[in-house]
Image (cartoon, rainbow, N blue to C red; front, top):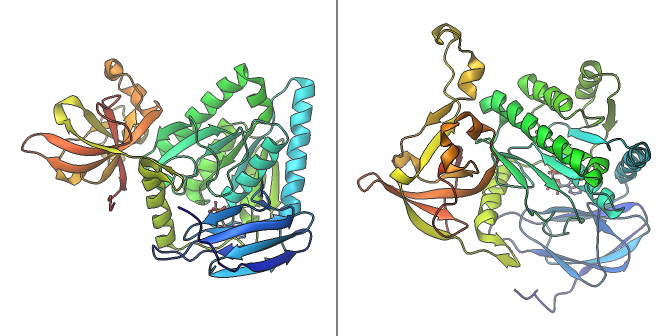
Length: 430
Ligand code: ADP
């Protein structure tokens, strides 16, 4: 698509250490907004802007253009809001980066591992944004940090309902975010950790183990450390999940955004050598409604199948015979302790593989394709801890002929035949 031409931009002159915040109206009919840097230097969440290049932002985008030295930019189109703010925590975020960089230098000198950082806080405080800024700054000074994404609701790496890890090798694209090549992805199956906290903690540990193993053989990854993005659920089991994550990843630094209570609790409960730091949230972070989140999740699934703007994918649709696949749900519904068979605990039920008989109610569900070799199927236990190699959506079920139709990023046949069902559904309106 050629950018609309002939539009007159609105010019903003920014003083040093200020930011231009703007939001693009949500909804299908909304017009996109274009941004152009005219003079000086500026960055969007830690990624530098090129001069005289138009960046396009789609419906629902909430953007901050920050400048360390001062700059002029043009906005084209009709943003829902656009204003300049002098009050930004970017300097604190930069100082945080500088402290982490010191730790990396020390790790290099002493043949140790680099900082493992967990970013926590309630929803809509800018956790993902802080992760992005810190990763960008690290990669810009030549580091190779790892992003660990534990936010199963709003996931920057893969489709919702997954936990994942991604090695960062270049700054995030201003419009599209980090390039997602070869992420390590695990199936969780729903958008909140609360639906199966045992599984959530188990998969967090799986990621920690894989990351640690990688650090043993890859010095750059080890020195680069990791930045862990977490869920906004910070009470009860959600809080316990954060403590579990800190311990399984052996984090060195916890950045708490905007919640003193959480900060005090973590200071109290984590070992004394963990540095717990309270950081303010940016006034620019906008609260997102339930609908906004739902739309963002759906968009993420759509992107998985259809690509993103410049890069379109053409997914395939084909039939799959029930007899060729095995579908499981992870976690049996919990039953009272008194009803559990002797020697079995609730933990066992939450990690149990329950075979799913394909029926009409499977329609529109997202299924993860497990990477487990078909031959290994006997080793059922391995399925829960096996990464996934992709996702399909069931678009039609025919119980008569024992077939279902699926939407898939790759042509038939399916690479593997063990499928895991998500609570998440996707209705393909294209
Ligand atoms: P969380 O991860 O805590 O849920 P996010 O980092 O996803 O929060 O931020 C929520 C929204 O706010 C995102 O759309 C993000 O682009 C936007 N945002 C973050 N920082 C700013 C800022 N300084 N100005 C404007 N929008 C921002």
